[in-house]
Amino acid sequence: MRIHYTIVDGGVAPNIVPDKAVVWYYMRAFSREVVENVYERLVKVAKGAAMMTETELEVEFLGGCYNTQNNHVLAGVVAEAMNEIPQEPWTQEELDFAAALDEKTGDAARATTKKYGLPADAHLYTGPGKVTNYNSYGSTDVGDVMHLVPTAYFFTACTNMGAPAHSWQFASCAGSSIGEKGMIYAAKVMALYGLKLIEKPELIAQAKEEFDRQMEGRSYKCPIPDGMTMPW
Image (cartoon, rainbow, N blue to C red; front, side, top):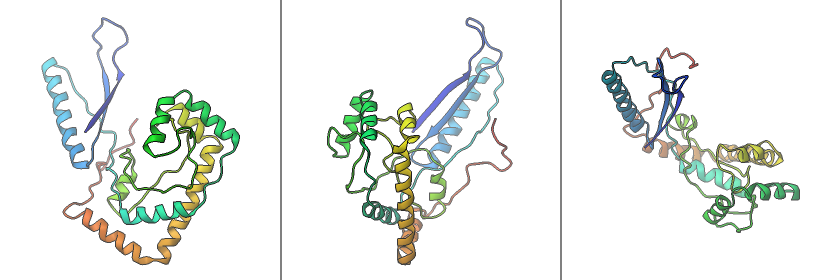
């Protein structure tokens, strides 16, 4: 369980008790049930603090999503497609750009190459290589889809090895020809993935069987309350 927060409004001057303060929390966990449980506890803590200080509390619910749920049957089909489609070669200019970025995050770059068994001097992923299945545990509304129908999603090489997520290095690569190549490669993978399912409908049936096993005893409950308006 992870609880993240930032103080959006803490007052306008030091040494003065503000008339209003705003803090933004969000919670992440391996299941929606745990998120809802901890959310309720966090609201109780806030209410208790308000009672102790004789202040008023307003809670604004901003949104929510489900955890990701791998479907190994579909993920295997995606992996086949990724292994069959050749990756477009990187230009020397792209390799040099990635190397320059990795100079700023050398330790992270080396950790990434070691994690995936790649050459230590690699700055951009260069195939061919065996695609493997894993769960990134990132926050995404694809998780909601995954609890409604069998779903698979994947990542392609769009950044230098040492680029941290949500960073300027990540953005600079994604907006360049490096990111464009990764996007086009992903489009080809999705096309072949869809074709494989059309040609072998038994794979869809197997994916549905796995999905039903995963959801046994559980059902999807939309985390967005009825009547909720767009948060501002």
